[in-house]
Amino acid sequence: MVWIHGGGFSSGSGNMADYNDGVTLAKQGVVIATINHRLDIMGFLDLSSYNGKWAMTENVGMLDIVEALKWIKDNADVFGGDPNNVTIFGESGGGGKVGTLMCMPAAKGLFHKAIIESGAKQNVMNSELSEKLGQMVVEELGLDANSFDQLNTIPYVTISKAGNKCVTVLMGPRRPGTIKMWGFVPTDNTESLPQQPYKPGFSNLSSDIPLIFGSTFNELDRTFYDRDDMSLEEATTILQSKYGDYTQDYIDCFKKTYPERSILDLVGLDCNNRAQSLAAADYQSANASAPVFVYLFNWYFPGPEGQAASSFHSLEIPFVFNNTDMESTIEPGDEKAHILADKMSAAWVGFAKTGTPSSLNLPTWEAYTAKNGASMIFDNTCIVEHNHDRELQDILTKCLK
Image (cartoon, one colour):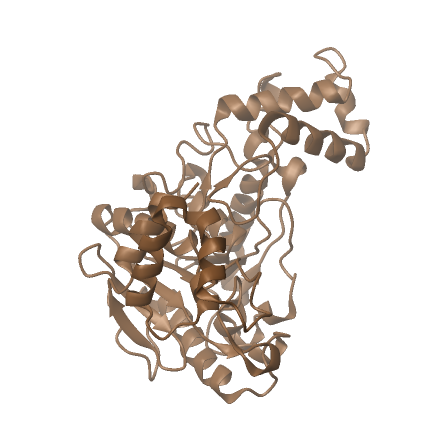
């Protein structure tokens, strides 16, 4: 099992948190590996328009991961692993990298199963825009075709500042949590990445790859979770800025879908990861030969002053790695957390071993189709729901920007 770290395509590392230590998973009979790779402007500065020497520079950060997977394939058996049974998994940007690898010809045959956690984002950098950004950076640094090789002598900080300035000029600032990504990220319509991941789906390269898609209930919008006094009127005003003319439709549908949830949940529900995961799962399940499995991580934990708080972005990671005592927001020794972590980590390991996520005391997790809408709901009581929030997600899809 190869863990690919999050942080978008601009930050992070393979050991960025204690809770993704792989020891507990390894005790369940798998070999855990993680990697580092070039990020941000070092990994995705497109200089391909200058000369052949700089070909594929737009995606070298992803090609680093391909090289790491090649090394794993060549050396897995030395560590007790199976080079013919490799599962790649990642959360957020790591999930996005998993999806990108599924569309890269160079990665074909280097992995056999995939798990995308809160990472079904579209990477909107096309080759024309990517080349333009690269040219702007070169000009900002005062270089031209004749002095181009001097790029190797310029300090990283100088290059990074120039890159950030050019991204802002060309595309404007990106708001965290938006559906699209831009800047120094992978570029499609290129030799190394022929197509856009998730739009409309995955290439035929990965039709034989069993896949798990999922997200958390709350994801990124935790702005108001330190409150317990919000009125419906105040919530409606806040939601109006998100959903505009669909605000009342959203409120009515949320109440029907989640009648027991609080006003804070109404405001804080994830508005894009779940919708995008379902759209991608719809496509993949209809067009791939391998099964697709979908989950929603929905565990509540004691928040401020004992108030229940929803599952935020990345909270599922310590459950997947069965390291909940290492997550600062979870009380050490929380027995309910331990029980859920046992179930969830075993499901991930079962999937890695067999292609089917299974775990003791977990309901049968059936493969997803757009018709059955089967989602495993991970909570203190785990259940499989069928299209329980499809109408709600359809409303959110209309509002995505």
